[in-house]
Length: 103
Image 1 (tube, rainbow, N blue to C red):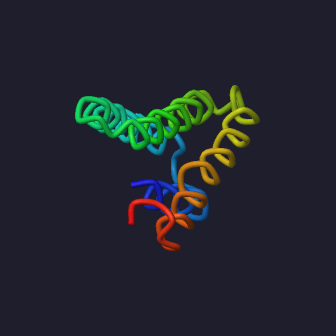
Image 2 (image 1 turned 135 degrees about the vertical axis):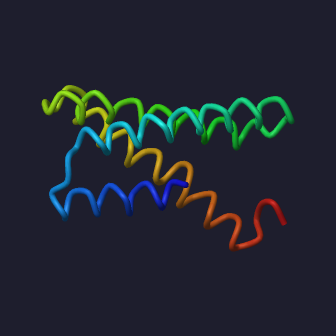
């Protein structure tokens, strides 16, 4: 889900498409992400639930900036996105591939 989000956002930027449409797409993904986070919390997978809530916040920070056309939270969204990339994708991916966790 997260990789597709970056690919779609990049495509939107390259093609110069309407940012409001991207905002609606991110809002939809945020709702889906919140549902996943709740499900993971219910079944006891708290790490995955935390990851989903972190990405939900990323989506939530980008939506107002894209809808209004002003960089309302763009600085906070950029840095939170970088933190989330390392904390929820790069580091767990490395640990998973190296067999240190989930193995």
